[in-house]
Length: 173
Image (cartoon, rainbow, N blue to C red; front, top):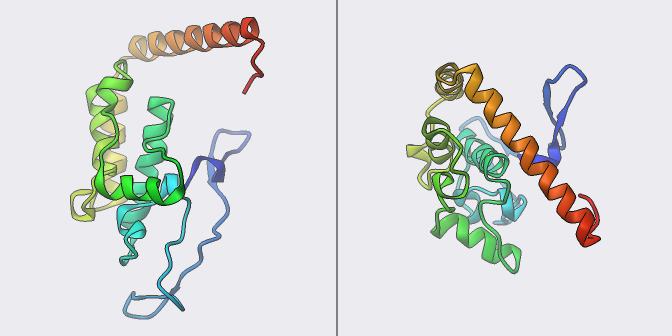
């Protein structure tokens, strides 16, 4: 799961595309690969994938957490000079806490992102249903005025960034 593979339909539904890493799974749920390989995009790889260990749905939850972190922070959780250094960071380091790099994000939203990105799969969400419930609870705890003021702040920041880019002659992204 990575941002480039998440598309929004006209009615706002998220669609996941590019299932390029197809796995052959035996009846005992053991992954079968011809040779031990690390598959995936370094910025969006789980620690267990980076180490060549067995993966399951919790690896997808980690990758979703990395995308969620990037959406909230406005930057990648980990970056480096090459794919190997980035993959090592997924194994050995934690990203800058959202409470530091995105202070306006409510603590319960930060908690969800951090839980998704736990290094140990056993410490991540045990089911998608529990994640969904936490997301519903977090959204319900936000008042509509909080959401409105945060959206206004983001629009203002984006407008300022756009003005800065125009005045610096930098291309828009």
